[in-house]
Figure 1 (cartoon, rainbow, N blue to C red):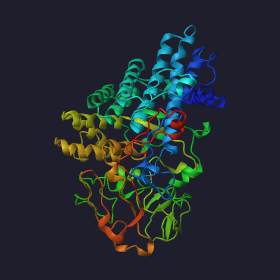
Figure 2: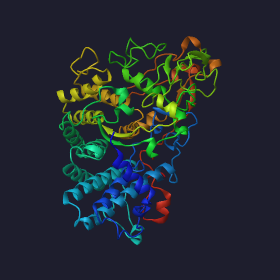
Figure 3: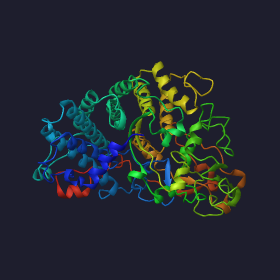
Figure 4: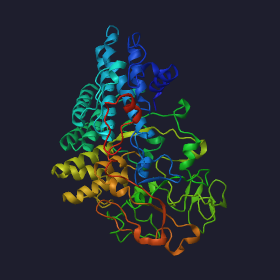
Length: 560
């Protein structure tokens, strides 16, 4: 993959002190000698491609994901307050990026004498797209926020107030539209990871969907789809999309490059939390039973309706994305058979060709996965070999656009063949078949709005785990108060495990919102942790105290 120019520019900005552009978000050191040529304009833009400024939400905030030690998760603990570090980091980084964009726009014409106008306009479009993305993140989490359109003097910054969410949203869409009109459909060579017209339209579609602007969401998503398969197409192999093999895929609309050689990677502490204990990991970052039970059977029915589901053989007859995202029991994984059964004290290792102690069974190692499940998505043998991961970070891809289009059309009452086509493209790819091969996958044929709404919501959940989209779905569908108030459920301790009911004691009922209920299983399950979500306040995050102390004019969100 040709990423060297973007990497180099990012590293130059970091190593030479990018703080000179950091207004944080107030006034900073003089930029009187900067923005004077094309190279400096490009450096300013490239610095905002860092992961500090690009992120979807943490899946630990959801009912899909749990950390054994429950570290740093004020959302599902219900303990978030105005001093919370997560809220402060999002707020601070967003306004840091917005300030840099505003400073760039105010000073870009200094380079006009030696930089083509077309180059300046393209760079401005990238910057305005980045600003729109930052503001969209802010309003979705905080509601009304200060709308800063120009650089502020230090004295002015202490007097800013919150602007109504709808006014900020209008400004966001203006920036998205400018970016879509002035960015190319694609870049070539070393620039392939840069923001494009499709990126502007995709993020506009996401923001419109999240804010209930169905017409805008439909039109923006449709415009991405109309760019054609030569620009964006679903990757043929769902599993490979999230590995190194997928980093050049036409499915990716926005992905942030990472590479260990360029020192843009996660090291052993991160990697081992996801790895099996047999392979040298801790099995600490794990899937929940809720996400496991969300995958349909191959007849297209949920597990509580399908005759094909067997809780004693739970991976059989399931949507192939289940086995792509979660490690299947008794299969080789990172050099060892993964078998969490309490009586499996040894397992076969393909690395040594012998049976070895099974540290993935809690009867052998008490801190093995408490749900019995491990993540597979995006993980391969290289994680164990290097104790490092440097997969490019996916922000947005075509499958999301297709499901955005379908959802918007459903909410508009415009159910037609294009809605079914958008959903079925995603579903057919999961089975590795063409959309026309309707006998080979459970194609959607219903036109009932209520059924389609449930289907799209379930499809989003099983398609996008670990991609940071579930949290905002829970928020915008007003499901957080239900999903995040039920306990995390897992395996009983080995001594209490009824072997005849391993791994799951039965089929949980799943309600109309796709939320399973394990309360009827008694001691055949174990409550691992309590979740808590206060619907009177947590649908918005608190305005950080540190900013309100400096500027008392910033009002707080209710009940914080």
